[in-house]
Length: 98
Image 1 (cartoon, helix red, strand yellow):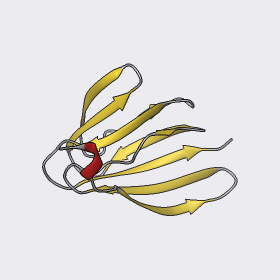
Image 2 (cartoon, rainbow, N blue to C red):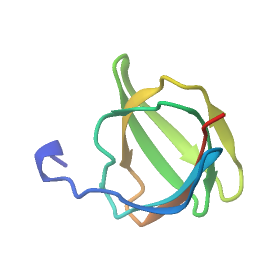
Image 3 (cartoon, one colour):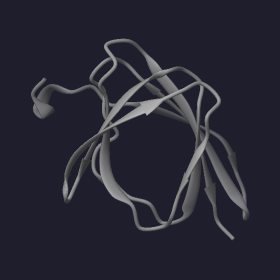
């Protein structure tokens, strides 16, 4: 799908305090976050199985998500996250502020 026509993924902040920010992300098929840079280390916990396409400064990467299989990334990650699953994709992102 043309990037100009992609829907926006829907973030719902569940917790935001001095220590962490917890956001549920819901992606319709082909929805995207838009380009962003992570200002904190973070953990992602998939709620659904699915495939993400990560547009990065070094090229695109496809990543498979599995329900409950968390992964962590360090501060500074820069990308656009796109749902490449063909169905709704949901995960919880936990940003670690300290």
